[in-house]
Length: 583
Image 1 (cartoon, rainbow, N blue to C red):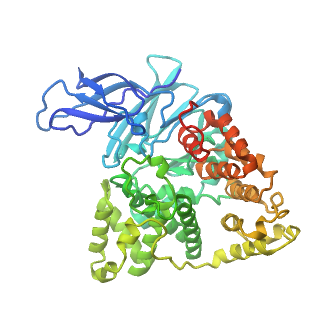
Image 2: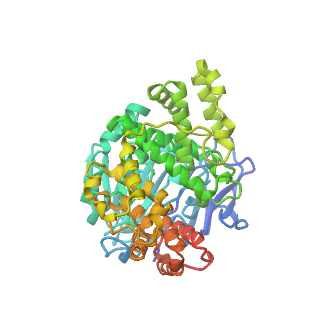
């Protein structure tokens, strides 16, 4: 049977009319009580992607300052968009089933009846009963465990999250998990097949945490653990408090992809502590987090490394703008998201357009140290609250009150409310990128592919190798790369070193160049892991290769049921497959 989250009592603000409206999606509600008394409830009309409002009427009048505990008894649907239930065959261990959640942006309502908006923050506690061979973890502090008094084959895990946070950060995982200590306040969790590899990969976590604290102020969440999920997890990472979720595609073996961890650590301040009030202001979460992540990279590596990562980010932004179209309002830094399904609006725009704005302001205001002073002060002022772009901007003008003349010259409308690329292109230091650019030029000019060997990339870091492939991918439509017989040979470079991150670009390049042997490899990679950053472009590339158009659709349909619901829906749209078909 399906595990069901236990009764989830919570305190929340009640309207003066003693009605409470909660968001739900595909929940089966059987009972509602208020302070132990039965309360009337009705489910409203169902919205195509926002779900169904749960209207609760209290059975008594409220007096000023009275506390009310509303308790909802319910079951989640097998198809809940926040939850992925994996069969034993879909796990590394192959013995036990596995459950994980992904609530951002508005999927928490399919798991818990809640006020599913980042404007509301709350603490939470939970008790989770699971079969005793499995372990439960949540985005909270672990608060003990005990045998389930109602079933001797089960164990109850307790959790508490004392720091107020929005409900998109509620997270749960149940599986055959093990953990290893990787620092004084950090453990890494995963199935035993990955746990030691993960402990090695993320061994720099405490250094990153200390670096972040030096930049942004004290870490208030107590524990910082990392959970490596099964391959179908759709994102690189998710900043769930106390327990960052990470894709296994980060396990490169050389710690080269840990900048994703620096990103999730940074969210402990920007996003989790200071939160966008609505999803229109998502750039406040992500732009500042990318800025902080790259400042951590600057401290741990060098300023040139930060510049190199910023250049790569600008290219990612260009790709998102090209995908959406330069006039698409979803490429605004602050888009209008009325009646927009947030999963479909997701892109690198809030991350990289947001970073570009902050970097531009950094240059205008006097450099990284000066601007980081503002960011730290902004975090202190708005901690524990949810804010809008206007509040951020007002504080920017207050903090830099001696430079208001310069700030007034910024074209705020072009940055915030105009689609396409930013109005100013930063001039980044290209020292680390030059070698990648030079190698890319060779590939687009040379006639004989036999002239390429591992020597070309001997001095390149993993980051540079990935950047080279990404540049080459942009160039592949040039006549040189695209002419008959010019298909790339099977991996002339040691891409294993960069684990999964270089391989998808390489396979996309091969498919784009009409190298047919690469098609099965591309589809294999698209289905063996489910990180959307890799899976969607790989499927799209094969789909766009006319000869294999139908093969892309066929493979997707075969694998669809094993994919994360968000990933499956978006790939279905990319491949123009009927999204109403049951999975």
